[in-house]
Image 1 (cartoon, rainbow, N blue to C red):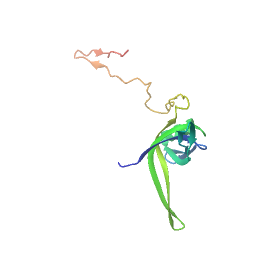
Image 2: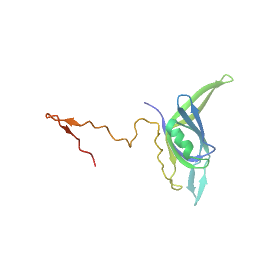
Image 3: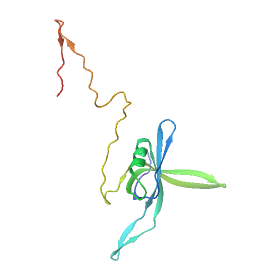
Image 4: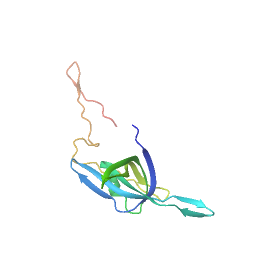
Length: 149
């Protein structure tokens, strides 16, 4: 695929919104403010802030909504997508980032990853022991399989 991949660093500039969509899908959306800084003549100088719309889908989106807040420093990686439409007969274009990875920017502090709790309504759980069928010898005796330690 020839998708345009982009990585942005910045701060979340508003609330993260999570929308649940039919079919069990979800999308989290937030605005990202990216302000370049340069060290010039012995001091840090801020450049012009650029604003980007970021969307994160499904599991990533739910995790983003549960983990990030306004003002958090983040790193976002994903596809740059152009949205084309017409308004008053004039073509319009906007860009958004469809995220494949989002996380706190650790140059500003530390964070702790908390894995999600597995669903309890699942048929197969990691704690479930595998089903083992005993073998029957030629003499008709049942051999119990060795159990793993």
